[in-house]
Amino acid sequence: PIRNVVFMGMGEPLDNYDAVRGAIDGIHDSRMFNLGLSHVTVSTVGVIPAMYRLADEIPNVALAVSLHAPDQELRSQIVPSGKFNTMDRILEAMNYYLNRSQHHSFIQYTVIKGINDSDDHARRLAEQLRGRRVKINLIPYNPTSKMGFDTPEAERMESMKEIIMQAGLLCFIRDSTEAGRDVSGACGQLALSTIRK
Image (cartoon, rainbow, N blue to C red; front, top):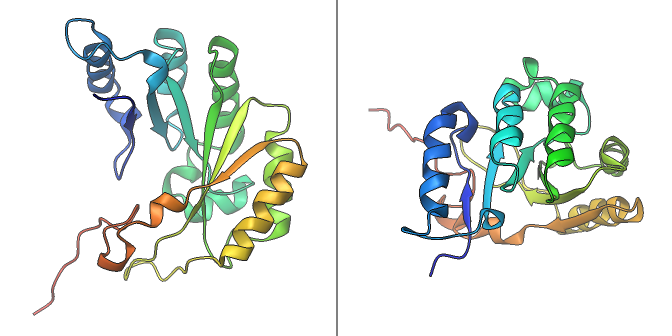
């Protein structure tokens, strides 16, 4: 039986809100899958109007927010949409959701070696999120031939986790996202490769 459903991937679920909402209604329908809304998670990079709509219409689904940086300056460099949807506005929308939902919000933070993996990054992330009902997932970056970024050392990940937890926040390392890395099939690696002749 299906126990959990996550709308997430190399697309943006909240850019396709109506279709996602229709799928959730079907998943929840007792005549179909009859899955409780608390077992459904919708991930977003920060489509702010749709975050408010989700909070108003189906607050009992879980919300995962992809931050990947502790501040707006760094986020705008590594997240393409970060220049338009600022971190302050995203966190305001997340607060709106949290005020209407019984869930924690999940914070997705892909850790990139030498870019966003320092102890200072961890401290500033914890400060940004302090007092909010969140669970932080630290996700080791899976390299691709196109981007030129590297995977952080395990010790770096553990250090960041420890700093965040000392600040009183729940934090986890998502090792499962590494599965398939050797064949470029891990999380974030399923990009189009073009063979030049």
